[in-house]
Image (cartoon, rainbow, N blue to C red; front, side, top):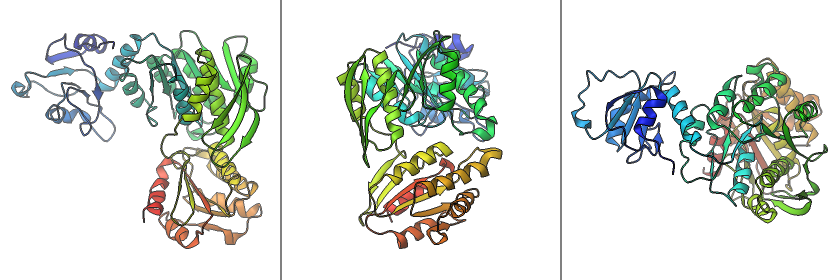
Amino acid sequence: MKKILVKDVIRVTQGQMIIGHDNETLENFSKDTRQINENDTYIGIKGANFDGNKFWKDAFEKGAKAVIVQDIDFEKETLSNFSNKIIIKVKNTLEALYKIAEYKRSLYDIPVIGVTGSVGKTSTKDIIASVVSTKYKTLKTEGNNNNNIGLPFTILKLKEHEAAVIEMGMNHLGEISLLTKIAKPTISVITNIGTSHIGNLGSRENILKAKLEILEGMEKPILVLNNDNDMLHEYNEKNKNKIEIKTYGINNDSDIMANNIILHENSSNFSCKIKGEKIEIEVPVGGEHFILNSLCACKIGEMLGIEKSKIKEGIEKFELTNKRMDISTLKNGVTIINDSYNASYESMSAALKYLANSNSKRKIAVLGDMFELGEYSEQLHRKVGMEVVKNKIDILICSGNNSKYICEEAITNGMQEKNIYYFPNKEEIVKCLKNLLIEGDTVIFKASNGMKFYNLVEELKNP
């Protein structure tokens, strides 16, 4: 394990040691006193509505070895009770976190795969990590800790790892620029360019620009792109002779492609060629978009010299992060699909297509608002309504200020009003479903995370 010493932290953060010894090792880092473990280093993060610096004493009481804080007047503090502890004061703890993580990353000469995109980041990260871990001891982003706080804390978990798969998210221009300079990926993946956060960024062109910031942290740019995405396909055509680009796809001619695709309700099968040799793969999750994610993992595995049998093994054993296509069956024989973590037009369309291909008596879509769409919000919610009809969904249930446009557009496109339910109060949805559901139904829940539709799923599963 590459060690970080107190003196390293003081040097990279230009901090001041209040008490402690500069040759002490700082191994594990935490920002939450509720989850802190013995000998952890606590970093007090100051947010808009919360100041973690105020809890430095709590961190010591919970067993922390060291704290890194800002804006604390230690001249007025009695420090005799902490003589065996370490206190480092910095100008800005968030900036200090970035610097410490950047330093930790610099100690490791390992493959680091950075993953970004409008949708599919987390599931693609999960599949890639499953493949890479068949050869290397692999660190991966847990859950969706892909922002300016989650990513550096993930990097700080590097220990005896031989590879890392790091997810990078963003809402605005400049955010991935920060993350990639910390993570310094050796291979970068862009899953697609869609409409997520278009309200903040203004156009898909700006979304592409924001995602391409991932190149800024790379010593030698190597991009792996979904060649079926229109904007990434165009980018590849214009730039394939300028930087190293690898592609995967189903429809457009790509470096690695899926053939003989067979879609099942809860899985799919396809074949592809890795280094000229054909391989048959079963994906343990249904939906064509997971075939694309798996192709990406195949390409990464090939680039890292992983045997094709191990690539197959990694894909076939991968598990999804919670709240993403989490499938369960109720006692009454109703199938529930919890895909409620996040939503965009593209992921809504994919979810509806998946539901349409399910073997169920009735296909029921419970849809909520998609956030951060700005002036495009009504237009994109209406497009979802068109997708509901296109995929022949039997019953549509919506809640949210903008999801009413989904209902309106479904009616405009021919869906009968008797099969559409709109509730201003989302708590009414569970009551409706309890009266509506019959054995053999399949219900999918899809909305932006802020709608908290996962609570409805839990209420339905555990009445």
